[in-house]
Length: 276
Ligand code: ADP
Image (tube, rainbow, N blue to C red; front, side):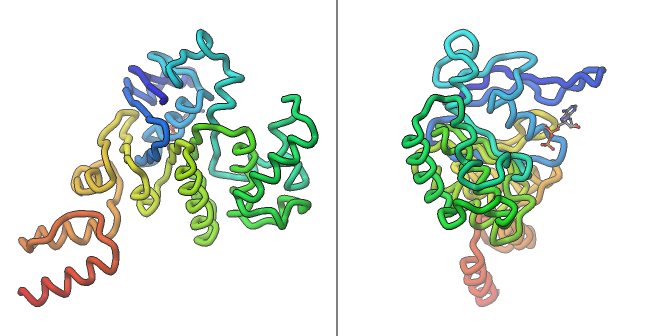
């Protein structure tokens, strides 16, 4: 569990800019939490705080009941939690896929055999086994992002924070990376996904809407996206069929505002037509 208690964060540029304002949040083990919010709302900063890359200016963050620097040092926190960024190329450091995966294990006193075993396990997990001896720039964007994730998975983290990991990828790359994220969550890794794609946001157990550094809405995706007007008031668009049901309801037609799937809403609209 990661617990944020009255967490605030300011950048000094050199004047003080308050970016995260008094956030209280508990992220449970095994959860899939999605963070959304318009550009500049503080998502990346919050992601870096949750990953312990940034330290709060005020308040504290506790991981598995341990206070950093008091009960747990940063080396052990790094093993528990990994962060993946938008651009995989900033995270890839070696000229060969397998070397890149093993990079984080260097200096950790593993035997060659242990390293080989860990690479085997992770490379299969991310479906890159056939590219083991290839240079990373031979891979597609989606494959390179999966390689970046592999470099973190090899450290066996319990928490994974991903900051817009699909935003530079084509549709196939996006689909592959999201499938991998879902699989990792099913295998027990706690996921914190920052995204601006609503079709990704609806996959979470919980969605947190950030606005001007504060939690604006929080709940299950169906509960959060039902609040169409609130979502729009902070510069976000609800999922397209949720918005469609909202517009239909505004015409005094009896329809639920919820996370419709294409087939469901098609059926519903056809029935509505019959009733009219
Ligand atoms: P988001 O991820 O929602 O776009 P960010 O956390 O990146 O939001 O940024 C929130 C605010 O903090 C923005 O106004 C941004 O300009 C500012 N900011 C982000 N990173 C830095 C930094 N390294 N130094 C100074 N200001 C920053």
